[in-house]
Image (cartoon, rainbow, N blue to C red; front, top):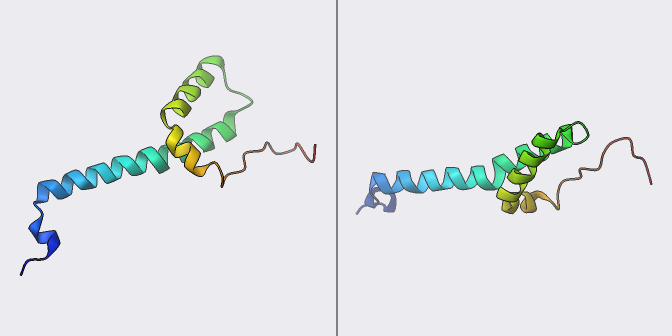
Length: 81
């Protein structure tokens, strides 16, 4: 009696793994990097850098919206305004 993992061809498992890795990068890794980048450089970005970041925000919006409820990106030093 074969196990389920042995019944699936190796190529199929590689494709599933590739989809999983790309999905994790699209929904987790790159959006967290964008949050970090925007938080660090928000006040010193140039025009082209800001345009590029806005393009990436548009491209990776689904991942960014997943983390939005959990991240607080208020600028430090603002105090209670």
